[in-house]
Length: 405
Image (cartoon, rainbow, N blue to C red; front, side):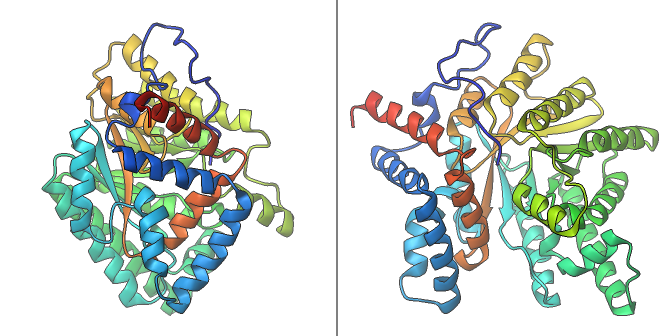
């Protein structure tokens, strides 16, 4: 995950008060004293890479072996922090709580890496149920889906590499397109957006192609389908601009969710092992520059591009907020969106919401066995050098001192 320490917490906003990310009273007003203490304890645990490594190993095996009390322990700790619930119905409480603080919800069913066709169909149906629920909640404008939950990974890898699929594999790929189309058609019917997540670079090309096809089909009167651009990849800024040009030429609007990226270690390791240049920027500064340039480009063309700035980086959020204010854009415009993960960076989310910007929490849901890979990624990135823990703990302690608890 991206570094979040680019702006000092108490550094004054140079253009006047756009948004104060250091206001912990607003950031944690939705938490009771006991919830605040539990969150502090959890982030202290995640501050230890050793403990996170041990937890990750034990959790995977304990879930696989169905050891007693495993799910209960996970649910009372990391699950409660980062997941909305086991089911859509259980997410309603989280959705309502966020909306009480002017924050929207993006629903994300946590399944990934499926291979059985029946399981893949069930993921599709779960996404369609999420769309129906979103349509009944003004506070849920978008759902998120992962293509790796809708097809076998090896099919995507072969397509990306240009390997000719056999007849059975071709049928499986056609089933994928049918599943994605059914999801997007359902979303268009109900006026709900669909974020299609990015994956590793070696399976991304077919995902991009399918997503652009869906945008061309459904992004006419409003933006329904969004592609995800991992801006730590060297090629993504140019791709974003090309996609916009293609969309404009062909008469539809582009949906663009920008993230820094989630697979840096895997990408660099695979490139080294297989002897090709890494697709990832050599320095974090290059990533930051490309990310912010991508945000700026989308803002300059916001009538044609619906943007979601899905970042935990203080400066990137501040720059977008400043642009909106200084150019007197409508903060509630449907193409000007911010988003952070549920359970992280509350100081960004709720302070943006307090100032009237359109901001959402990305809320995963699903049974523990389905979301455990997601939970392990959250724990690992929060324990890394460039993770969230130090900043989160600083803010949490500041709020505890303010409350005198």
